View (cartoon, rainbow, N blue to C red):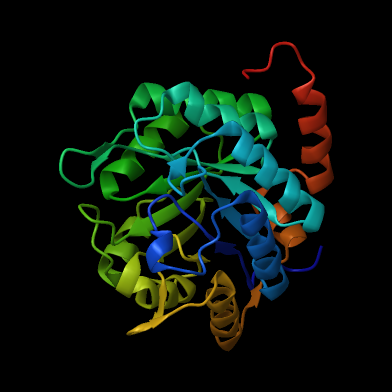
Length: 295
């Protein structure tokens, strides 16, 4: 494969767990809508989809069947890399958070710590859960995307790498601007980047109004980027995006203005050391028939 040094992995996060559909008419919530939106984003230049699902009422969910249907529909349409959330529901037992990995996505998120959100709600990610998730991902050949919302989570991830729960080289996603998380400033982005181990790949995004600031800084620093309605619903002040494609198309233009190119899914797999789409599909089919699978 040709030189990939100027390629940027563009992830789309089309749904998320907390973006309210009532305030965002273009938000895809059913498996069919999510797959259709993913396909359009793939055509526009996204090479990875960060996959959340919703229940029939539109609420955050880790329901296995919703993931199964979404993954199947996406794989029918295109070769985009599937990066599955493990944090899509509130108060969901650990085993239910891990179960959708049985669908053999190329990647899955690993949120490297707990954090306060609102009121009495805590986004809970115990070390025991992270160790269990790391072991399961290795068993299934799935690459963790280590999500870090503050510097303490980076150090937690470094310990998990040292202890063998995450293989090297790791891939990080820096999340800036969440309520009660690390503020979305360029200074914080640079500081977090400098904590990453040698050889790590990384991406970053800013939540809400800081979205463009962090996107531009990430590209300047040599990172990869993530966009989508999970993180931000406004293209500009007072102007809501009509779809996730709006974000992907704009980001593609910004990438190209920086003399870079969006990576294709095939290039993304090479850059991150992922299995091929067909290998994932074949293994998922074989794995679903095994009597020892988790589900």
